[in-house]
Length: 216
Image (tube, rainbow, N blue to C red; front, side, top):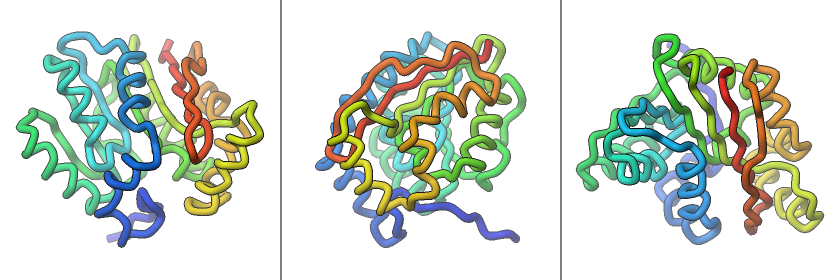
């Protein structure tokens, strides 16, 4: 079996157990994720995919804020999903979690109303970003929408400089498109319409932007 290749959430696998703690003390995580969920306008009964769900913090928040939504989380990192499963059990929420090969999402066409993703795409090189976006486009239904929170190019030189800290950790190749502000262009290039930066958050590691897009 071909081994999955990916950059762990904190670059090194030995840091995975510390992921939630380190994100909590270094980022306005709750504020960003609440804004992402609010922007997504998730209706009762909507089928929601959290792409790159990690430890399922966002996935659980979606279910708690929108209890009637059908929520699925997917990630390529089986080890970090173990933590996600523990958290879901503790919260006693009905969420479906699974891992995949990092290539093709294991869902049929038009399976979801919404796909959300938070702080995942800066881990992916440009070609992998494009493949992931194409898969997200495929599994969304005709009226589906995509909402992503990730690092982007800031007008502030301070924020651009701070982002170099993350680039040093995650690698300059995967973060290149984010640093150049190309993520909206890549989303549009996959076929998404009405791509727009909705909100911007200044953080100690650079500017995080919420971007929305529609399938048609």
